[in-house]
Every structure is written in structure tokens, then in C-alpha cells.
Amino acid sequence: ARKAVFKGSKAEQKVYRHHTRYPGGLREISVKDQFAKHPERVIELAVKGMLPKTKLGKAMAKKLKVYADAEHPHAAQQPQPLTINSRSDQE
Image 1 (cartoon, rainbow, N blue to C red):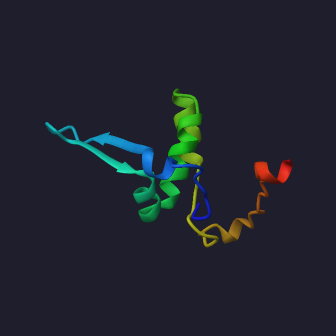
Image 2 (cartoon, rainbow, N blue to C red; image 1 turned 90 degrees about the vertical axis):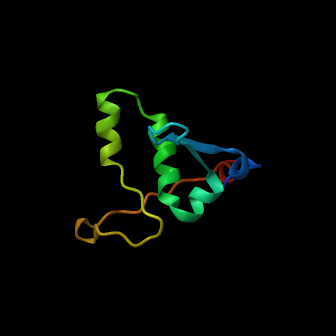
């Protein structure tokens, strides 16, 4: 997740907002700041936004595991790396 790249000015302009449920409790953080603190959360939120907003989508999101670097606690399962071609490679 740490290798993700943002095109244009999306890192500064895109903002995540959440409410603390207290009066005046609207909090916001830019993608740039969130990516510096927790890069895996940026990817998780992007994927969750693409999933259906139903019980099945919630179950699918629970199974999603994103890690900032190559180190992860799933060495016993022997996961295979997934290679994804970027758009610039296809052209």
C-alpha cells in the first residue's frame, strides 16, 4: 500500500470526513496526511467504496487485508504475489 501513487492534485484536494457524534465533531483529514500515517487505510477505503453497500459488501470488506509493506503475518499460507499492470504499461 505504501507504493500507491496519486495523480494530479488528488493527494491535497481529496478529504476523508467522519463525525464523532458530538456537536461540532466533524473531523477531516486529507489523503496526503492519512497516507503518511496509515497507507493501508487509504487503499481499504478506496476498495470499500467500490463494494456493494449491502450485507454481502460488508462481509467482503471484512475479508480484505491490506498491508503497508511486504511483511505480513500470513507466511504459513504461502500467498502468491499478484502482479497488476499499470495503465502506462498497457499502452
